[in-house]
Image (tube, rainbow, N blue to C red; front, side, top):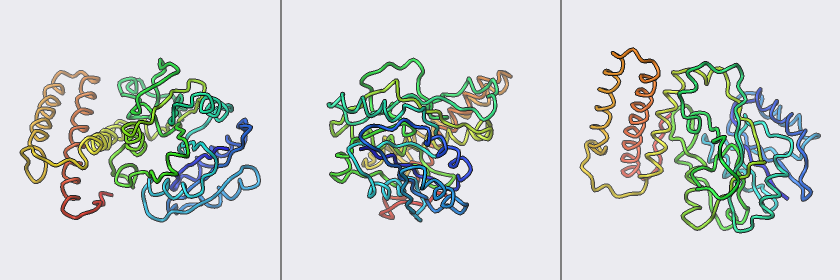
Length: 315
């Protein structure tokens, strides 16, 4: 038995198409179920999910507190079986996805975390400049050259991830201070979890036969959106590295001075690159600047958290 866990918020249209694709999945012999946690949706998400009750082994749950990780933690209460498969509400699985994950989990018994291939499903043909982006942090796509076998936990993507249930039975939960919580947040929802598990001794395996397609809308093929993504990515990377540490470095308003120096240097780099009229080089310079800006923002957020004793809302 395995359980699929999905958190969703205000994505009724795409969720309907995704659930339709689940009706074509090959069923693992040990059985399966789907848990969809509605994270305070204000559209017709609940009605869409309800329309699939007679077609899928589906459980609906509601979590009003905004945050993907709050929703995932709520969903863990309904899991069954020995394997939990995590994915997103805009991800389309290939028909043998679950069978492939189930087979590898049953044979690679030394491993507790599994991930597979994430391909793009473009809403429209991507513009040429999309080739300039790092498709991992920007579109959550895997490296097409990756081989079957052991991998570091940092390469486990939440769009296509399975973890043995025993990990959560002992009390492990997602960290709500990271991951989607509105439009402004630190990326790294699942990454924080799997890296924590890796430190505890749990190992990860890459399954080349377990394939999903991540829907990438026309809206996400916009340079402005990509630059905002750079900020969220920078925030997430800073939180993953620095949350919980005692700051011994020189700071200003709680932010390490080295971050200010770095962002000034990146700003100068943008100015110099802009005068070169090289579009790709300017794009990459802006990405690095926004990534650094995200680190600066998150350093300040973490500093404020230390004095409030809890999370700071940044929506």
